[in-house]
Image 1 (tube, rainbow, N blue to C red):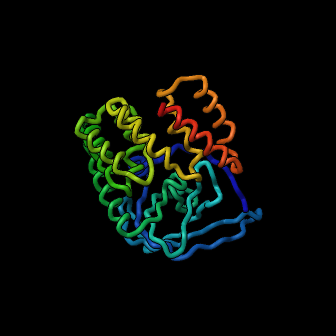
Image 2: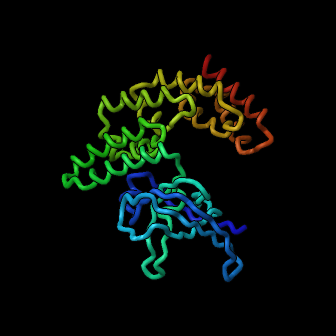
Image 3: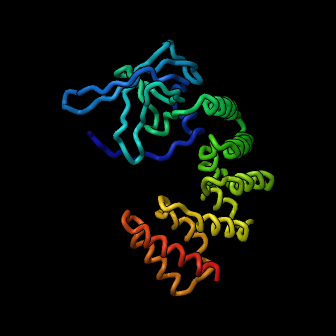
Length: 273
């Protein structure tokens, strides 16, 4: 296996639409693993195009090389017999297609999820045509809130709403809608939403985070520091400082989960004093 690193900025949906030459809905018919000239693996996917959402493609199928062994971020990955929403570009010299922004540019989705993405893509394509910059920003913020309100596209919305350019334009009504998203999600805590809403909802969010921390699953003990960072203001004692230092010592050690559980419980006890 060949593994490489290539850091790139995160690419939420709006930026993918802005930057990609082509967007398609497709079905991955087949994937192949080949051996290149220098012994490296080459991964190829054959995709049947179901629908083109951006760019002119005069093909029923296309072949694309992908890179599943990249990390930071994760490389693009195509899986046989799955439906994908794919954002890609074309190399003008080689005439070959490649996924835009690696893992961000290919989304393996259920059919109903694809329909949600198609609607959001169509909307942002129209918003990006608005010539008035302020009106475009206002419409974009509403679009991002709508993305955040749907579980399928939640990250696409909250990631960019956290940006100060959009964050400063969120209305009171929109914040109330985002608050519902935060408090109604029983699967995970969206800490970008926490930071967007915290100032006006400090007591309620503290209570939410404390309750979620109490039921944090052991596979996520490494993420307790997100909770700690918000809640530590409730106890500023030396003992709290020691607990935080203890947590940092063990948080990335797989065989110390019992110790991490003890530290988390001690943190909760201090916060509740």
